[in-house]
Length: 321
Figure 1 (spheres, one colour):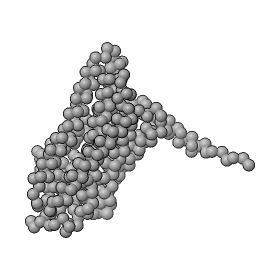
Figure 2 (cartoon, rainbow, N blue to C red):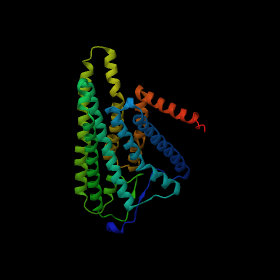
Figure 3 (cartoon, rainbow, N blue to C red):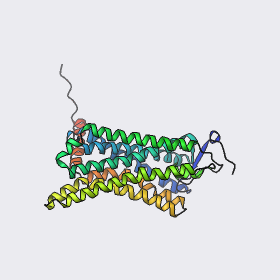
Figure 4 (cartoon, one colour):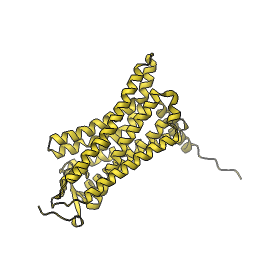
């Protein structure tokens, strides 16, 4: 096919999941509900950790940031998909597609780095409890978040600029509900060797590296927990990191499963359906995972609701003249 210059490209087509109108309506309702639950659940965690002084600790500081990133993460893909379903359109502009790639790459890498930072936090808390507050002081916490943002922004900028340098053919259909980096690169008519090298090297360094750090942290955590003599002490120590371990397992198992299956099968529709797990389902489940087994967070949410109920039922009395 004849290649087109980047400036001549007006739009890509996101094929989504189904062509049937009735099924599209069902998908719209399902994803709208999931998106609202994701935003509401993560927003409640943000409000609880910000308003309750009992949660002003390093662990909840990182959870606050993770919840914020999860809201942004789903907001880069789901609203556009909902608009396309509602308007019966599959189009996304060239600029919109590049922008979506940029923020999707940025936020997914930021998610990975935050999970790694949280694993380090749990490692220090369980393996070096006496030095925890000294090590995880506000300066280090801020530095870890700043480094995560800088690395993610630079990586996303690199990938976006490399996509901008590609020339595309006439066939601009993406068998996905979002502008996924790999599939957009595969549509290019120009040489994509450098893009593919950067994608695979980044996957090893920025994906495999954090995973290795998380596994190392939890190997040390498990060793420390096994050294605790009492069963109650072991349960208490494990319960402090069980939620984070569940989130890490869910995120990495689904994302690795998607990319391993895409390497084996050529069914892009199956891959896009599977990718829903880490792009939509995981951010939605995170608030439930962190709140169901966490008594401190449940107590903070209860106090938050009670304050709001009192504010509604007991407004300030008007001052008497």
